[in-house]
Length: 307
Image 1: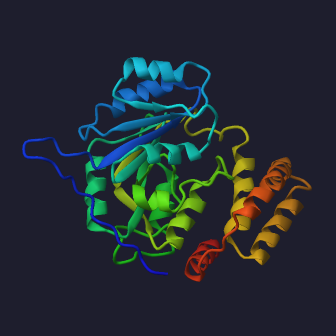
Image 2 (image 1 turned 60 degrees about the vertical axis):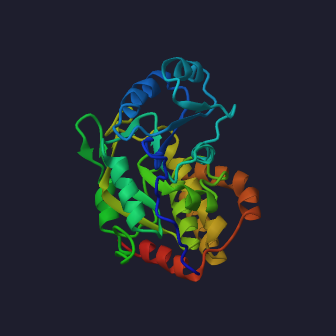
Image 3 (image 1 turned 45 degrees about the vertical axis):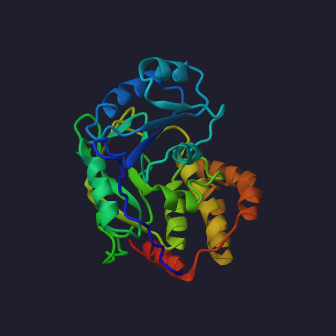
């Protein structure tokens, strides 16, 4: 596997002209018009003045019209259906900035974070995606995921700005646009639910680095912050873990994962639901099955063996 090379993001401008933006923002939303509008108020005031693309995943509450009326500089895309996480890929393809910062309708970037991201990517040409440090809720508490990423057993590679990771929070990450699209973006079979893991694997499979960069800070204020996960999320996460195994892992691993979920399903309704949903999507997964390179597979196993 040959490590990719990338030109450092750089703005080429005519004398006296404003530099071209290096980072654009992609946001996805569905039927959360007022929450989105409040978030856009924050995003459009960032000192970096990034271009913003909003992907409306099939809203029925007038989201697109409201965004066009209040934020004419924001580009709104309406694919006409709920693309799930693939909406982020759809939005990234519509941008022309070298870097893409991802947000949801309940998350945004701290002032200065995107300028720092441009510096980090310029200094680390192999970096394909940077996982940010996330502050959660109105009290801006540290997301527990921050500590997990910081303690990654994969260690820190000398040409990356932080610990190597194979997971991140989708609404708190910055990607090199070319690397993200080269890897295929988010996989359509998964829709939503821990879909970030497969993208991280696919980036690594192409030689791009995925690293935790705590200097990049995102805010996330989900509904019911600190409470229970959204209904159905646990089943979706378990479903997608199984589908990821069938998409990228050796057959023995995929079979063992399937057996474990089936055994759990004898007493756990969420496991039964996850298995049922995975079975319906399995033909599509098998049609796109592509094993990870040996080095990446070993890194995945190292994470699995970590307590």
